[in-house]
Image (cartoon, rainbow, N blue to C red):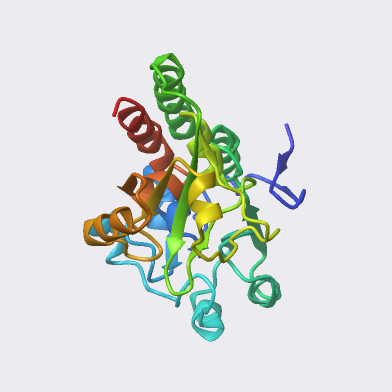
Length: 263
């Protein structure tokens, strides 16, 4: 089986007995590497890579997901770089590719894409057994979610930022997560994947409720209460990590969706 990433680039398993040196520029992938038993191979991470806290604390930071320190990464001499199409800037990744031998590009678009992600990284880094264990855990949670009772189809506005207000489009991982429990993502006229929007009577009339994410903007219950009074529609604060992080956290994300569906 060919090991192909999101850009169609073929990869190969690391050499037997070799210890790869991995820099991860994606928080959810850093956590996934740790859950695959590869924490000892991670030589660099972003400041947003915060899970598992007790493990990543000892891994050097190389900047953010979009503004990385190229010289610091060069000094770390990584053999592999893990990035994501949505989360990392193309020019930065191209600059890193000049001196990092293996750049693995990811782009999960729906919950079940995590299965291929587990298997890809499991095969590249020769931890197939651990990857299969994650696949099995994912399938169990997914089966439980499919079997769980769902409410009526609703159109929900998922907010990721304030000042300016921003949402997600229907071709995002978050929207696919929402769809698993019958929440159709409100689609802005703007074709951007993460468009800005303005509140209006027409918008409020087009939705059944609002979902405020705890990240990247730190929405709180206070925001939810104030907005609910303003628009007269239900407003729910959601755990942004459970809704938007893929990788191993997606397993808990499916469980989280089941709890949301149950009310």
